[in-house]
Amino acid sequence: MNRVESSVQALIGAGGWTGAGASAFQTAANQWIQDAKNIIAVLERFENSLQATDTQYQTTEEEAASGAQKLAGASQGYHGMMP
Image 1: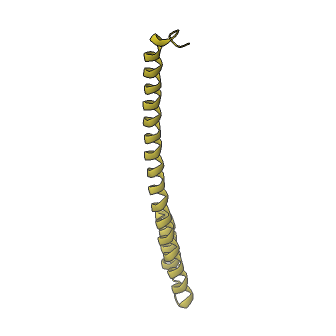
Image 2 (image 1 turned 45 degrees about the vertical axis):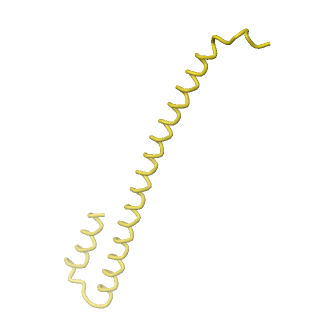
Image 3 (image 1 turned 90 degrees about the horizontal axis):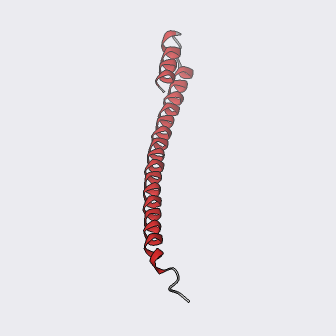
């Protein structure tokens, strides 16, 4: 985003572009940059949520596997007792 902002400023400042067209372009470019920053922030929050969900899922999966192994181990002594 910094490169885009720098490019917009260079385009407006270095060329001496003035007038209504320059103002309209700068307003539109600034709005686009702000919107892009907002989208990036939302995507970063989404990524963090996905990582947290993945961590939770892995923990739950490990706990379930451990519980199943304990149950399987505990039931070993009961083989042959059921009709």
